[in-house]
Image (cartoon, rainbow, N blue to C red; front, side):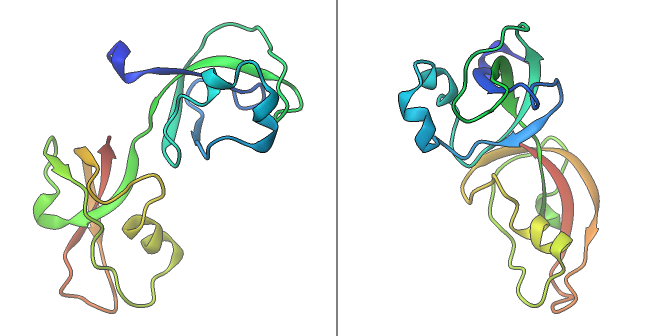
Length: 150
């Protein structure tokens, strides 16, 4: 992991554990009055992050987290998604395009076809190729479950 891939932010003490993943949803109204808000708000809204290091055990006052917040290093977390089978090649770099998953989908398949934290046009790398994803309403669609790195 390169230093340029990491960002520094604050997160609630209950969540401040290496390996913990979260979605950054942006500024809460309570953040307006915080003197440390610029440190927290350096992340990209709507993205998934993974804590890779808890900086120290210092607890900072936080108007959102009732037990305070701690300084952590984060990276963008891998995202599990379904992509066209022809593009599912380990190590391949691509621009993400959501597959055509029409029909009545179960929750798991829907989450693979429309993963939170990933947008059409995002540049990503296929880190791992997993099993095939079946779309019952359209068997002609050939998808693979993959782990993508942004």
